[in-house]
Length: 412
Image (cartoon, rainbow, N blue to C red; front, side, top):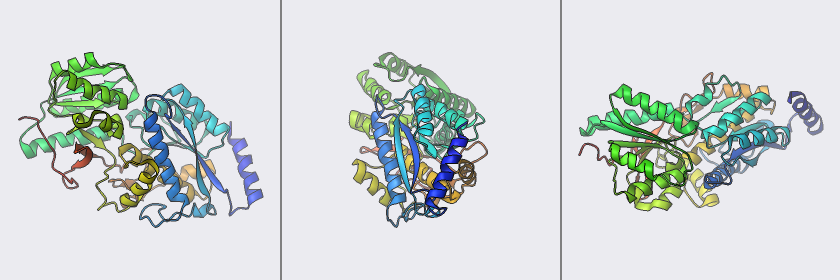
């Protein structure tokens, strides 16, 4: 469909610029919610992606993948250029913007996109045009189970994340004698919340933990007061929310307003990884736990973290978090694959992505590494559990990488 046009364009570039200078720039399309209720997430993602491009394009000595900078050496020092598109959190807008980036901006790859519902449509477009889509921060487990050839995800998905949660419940119960007997599932109604809740329900049943309530709500609701009353009535040991930022804020305020203090909250990241939540509700979020793909406090094992965080902070006046850490990592892995391909030819780029095998210590993530299976999923992504104390997240699990003991009120 678009392959003949792309091939002609690549041929013209090669003839005009010479084979060593395959391109002065490598253009990547990044799709995020730049307006609407998750606009701050989009702004943070933009800063993260720009930080990654700065590392690739500049001159550095950061101990990580492409950390020396200087551009993509196998493409004659070509620089990474990002074009951002606003999908507004709307899957159909995401579809249209993905197609525009491919057909009009001639990007060599797409990256994004925060909400899994938008990733579902973006990845379908990418497959149709045979352009790689790098899922940086979408966590729905179903995304890589649709037989797509051009889908790649560096981050763990929600089954992997949820397994880490239930492993923590088991191990903290054994360590303290305070076992989780019941959970309350609380999830928004798109693919993210639905897939997350399905995984949590199955793992709770397998662990012999009662699901005291399974509460589904409409995302971006103006009020969650009815749902909060349901949570209070269920009174489970642990509330397990799968919520974006505005809903997470409403949840925490709502629990406070009805005078209910949960024994524990274990979140599926998303809005619970955002500084905007801590800023909005302050001490109400103290003690909240979340799964995470990133650990800012893992600098001893991942020495690139301080330098990368400093670059990000200079650009966005805040520290890296679960979402932005994943976004930088995904861009660096994509840029490395383009560099190893030595070309922007789609088939060569896809082959380089398939062959990816990055050791964990070459990233800022507490993972074993980055290695994709046949579905495009990184099978070496190993999550951690973090907890908010004094307004910041600290790693509490696995115990061998924890920097603090968990505050654990279950079973008191």
